Image (tube, rainbow, N blue to C red):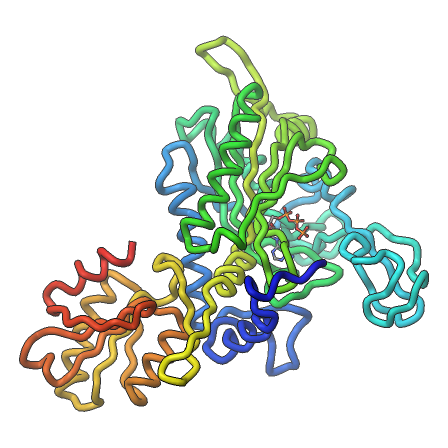
Length: 443
Ligand code: ATP
């Protein structure tokens, strides 16, 4: 994969972001005290806020602000019938090759050169590709027999299809309408990597939009444009985000159109989200397998039809990582390096940090009081240790839009100094108007 222009993406960005994630409590390698566990990660005190904000921003635009989309939270464990009908048991495979020279394993479709081992450089030493199923298999209940086999979902989408009738009958929605879900998915990836970009346990944000068949193309184009705009609205730089329509040979057999939203990572353009026009494949497959009718009767036209589906499917953990990379900036202030994460306010883990200038009770008492007031409205940090310069530097690295200093004058004038993360300008703001001041700037 071609590496991006260094003027657009710092070639060392990947290492810098991974390092910052560990140092500031965004992401830790999972089971670290036992030596780590196979590309799994834990989200620390700051990372959990970032991830929640990414999911919340998605939910806000996909569910809260729309009257034609409803939410769902379906089970992670499911019986084989779901995955047989969806085609995952037969087809959810990646082509696996082994290098007979160094015994490393690769996903054939992700190799730059399908004849050369990226590990040892051996040419023509790969085994024939084998289809490797990516689903995690387990047993539900105490007996490990075939009747107890269950799978961890490899995508959240099937939950929406199998609940189509339940939602239709209870929500008073009719096509065009959508069902949205955020949750964990599991894939036994052959080559996880690039930090949290590809992991075996990850979170997805998916929406199935059910439409009359003749309107599918219109809605497909609508969702491609809408989803691309979401990334731009949340601070992704326009020159690092694009929509890439799939070539005909990349399309699944049932899809009449798929586009990926791609981000320019340090290793090149790669996927953030896929938007697919899936036809009526999924509802038809589950209807045939279950014997339940999964269709819609339109009383206005007296017609019964199986809706077509447009699916925008994004990764929450992958998107959080892309937001981190896009936000990372290094500048120089008075000869010193300054690292700052310029998150969109909706994505920023903390919205404000309350920093009493001294640890004296005279300041920490009212500063704690102020924290309590602001925390009712926004996620805030409170920090009274170290010099104010070091505390500012820490908040810059967490991407906190506003630092609020409570100083000795505050006791008398009932005002605080508010420092803007991006301009570094400071403004004196009365405590009484602080909630409104921040609310106006944190939209
Ligand atoms: P890839 O080609 O990268 O394996 P995919 O096309 O199979 O991904 P989809 O099935 O379309 O991915 O899943 C939708 C979204 O879920 C992806 O765009 C990505 O953001 C996220 N996702 C998929 N697999 C992983 C993973 N292993 N780790 C993290 N996120 C993932």
